[in-house]
Image (cartoon, rainbow, N blue to C red):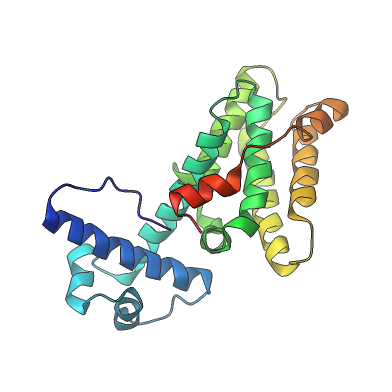
Length: 220
């Protein structure tokens, strides 16, 4: 995964950006492996940068891991936004996002595991996937597409479904990720008030080329 920062023109700034990117990538690899209890030296060795370089960018390794999670969440969110920006129906936007997220767990396993590692703290965040889900659900309510008496409780259900689906797909590598994602999305659409036949039809719509976009953006 790459750090989501505009590449500067100045040579020194580009070098600093490469160092920061290497540190974030190293932290994401450790998060994906479930191995955060490591010394800063091991992180810098994995990133192939000097120990002093670490403290030019981060005060603590906890700050680095937080930046690594934020980077992954926003990168994934940007991908979903790019793949749904042609849609106008809030129900279709929501469904496409959930269906695509399910497929991302297999197509971008490192990013998926980083996101899953931070799942408990995402509900209250104003960035990342939960924030986008809240936005899409609120749009559906405003447009009269969703019947949601309590947005916070609905977000709990949606977030739990997406997170545990991701874990299930990692635990069961032979399971069909597309079929599972579409089934979960249908159930979520029904949960927010979309009629059965319409929910089924929305989840049968073709999806954009997610794999190509991931390759173009160097997300893994």
